[in-house]
Structure formats: structure tokens, C-alpha cells
Image (cartoon, rainbow, N blue to C red; front, side):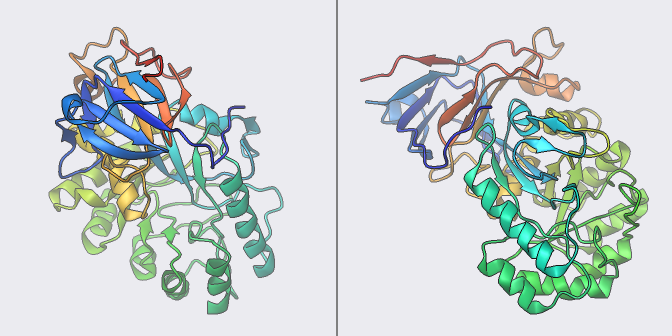
Length: 399
């Protein structure tokens, strides 16, 4: 299993001959630049090669006129420990997802842990342990932001302070535990926000036997930071209620792979109509009953672009920069000072599309030619995507 220590340094890296540079910034999705310079995992220059200091690089990558984009951020996953999911008893799912262009994952709760503790001491202990474990272990180099407790009845404000003091920054999906009423959730969401913990709420019908319906009124009353899987996980609210959530709430609109595709498109189009596309973020909601989806994020991009009629370069922003900004992450955008987390893509071989963006607009997922996290190459040609027409090449070090 490919892993990398969080302290490993990339040195100076130059990426040249970029054909299309997607920024992740929804206000300016395409950059007029062909070169990136990285120093110890951070972007230090973006521009034309003639204007960048490319000398004495430890690593030089020829992008071969392919597309470079920020690494995809899966806003909604359910990890447990290591690179194994007991939900489907599969190993290596995180590394496999990295081969689908994902460089960061955000836990919506470690709910699939066998025997998951539901007492307050136990749920806090699990969250702290998961946060520590994934901070120390990065399958495939992927940054897994974990430790998202499922809130239960009986929790008090001090519990949220304890969690924050221990380094927990997320709440698992509100509604998966015993707290299901809007007024109860609202109080705990406020406590969490007070201590810098970001919250997500389950939206829609029950995901598995034992969970329950969270309707639009509960979502609005709870006022969590993220309207989790607004298109259902799997069962969605009505399109009218989903559009009402988009209009009446100012929170993040999360659309996931493991949801209702028709409602996914309606939610994205509603956000555009309301002139708030910056609120849309994407996730997979896996592992789940439907399995794990190594290409789930790319499939969401293709779905929303091809059937939703949204330009692919904008949808990539939903999967990168929007999430980074809404979740306060130092990745997801191509700009100086951000983490050098990139996915190199080209149109899939024999796609009917003229180029990468056109192929996605036609419904094809792209081929991944390379993934880089913190300036370090984590994989070359993806073992999971269709083969890219062209792939980048790592050249000899330049001195």
C-alpha cells in the first residue's frame, strides 16, 4: 500500500508545458498559465514559463499539454480505520480513490465502525482516535480529515469544547444518531460552531435500516454548516423541497454520487439560478450500501456537466475550490501558498469529445495521467480511469 509520511518534503518541483490549467476558483475557472513551481509541497509560482524561476528543480514534469487541476476534494466519506471499510469489507479503497483524482477526503462520521460506541464518553473517544489516526496515516498520500462524532442525546456544551480542545474539527452527519429534532440539533450545531467545529446534516430519507427521515424543516431549523447530500443518500426529498432548501438556507449545498441523480441536477441548477454557485460542493457518500466509488467524483463532474448543462470547468470548481473555501482548507485552488495537490487529466482515448472539457460535456469521464499530493507524485497513469490520450512525463532532475 502506497503511503507517505506527512513530513516528507518535495523539494523544488517544476511542472511545465501545461495545456489547460483549471484554477478551482469559480470566479475564474481557467488560468492563462502553462507553468507551476512548487517548493516543499506549496505552490510558489503560477504563470508563463518565461516568467517563472524554474532553475535548480529537484523534479521537472512535462505535462505534455494535458490539463492540470486542483486535486479533487470528496466532501462526504465514511472512513473507519486504515484503508479498510467494514461496510463492504474492502481494503485499499482510499488508495483506489486517489487513482480517481481525489487528494483530500472529509469524514461525515465513522459510522460503519463495528460496535460503534453511542455513549458520550465513547463517541468522543472514537472521534479523537479517528482524528489522530488519519492525521498520522495517509493511504496513497490522501489527506483524510476524520474524527467526526455522531451527536447523541445528553451531550452538553462542555462535550463540544472537549472535542475541540482535542483537535476535532468536524461533526458527523446530524441525524444519524439519536438527535433528530430540529431544535435539539440547532443547539448542538451552535455549540459546535462556537468551538470551531463544522457540522453537516443528513438530508432526505433513511440511508440504511435504523436511520430516519430528515426533512426540509429539520434541516432549516438545525442550520448546520453543510446541507449534507441534498440529493439524498440515497432517497431524496422532493425537488420542490430541495430547491426550497437552496433558497432559504445560506449553507453549503452538498451533492453526492450516492444520491438521486435527477435531484442532483436540479439542486445544481437551482444554485446557479439563485446566483450562488460558490455554495455547491461535491462528495460521494461512500463507502455505503452501494459500495465504494473510486471514480465517484469524476462521475459527478461528468453527470452535472453533461446532463445538467453546466460547463465542466465550473463543475470542477464544485469539486475543488468551493469545498476548500467552505471548509477552510489550504488546497483546492491553484494559487501561490496553496498545497500542491493536483490531478493531471486528458480526454479518454477514443472519446468523441474534441478535447478534455468537451468530452466531459458529452458525458465521458476523463483519463487521469498523474496525481500529485504535496508536490509528490502519488501515481502515474491511473489504474481505474479509462486511459488518458496523453500523460505527463517526469523528466530528469534539472540542475
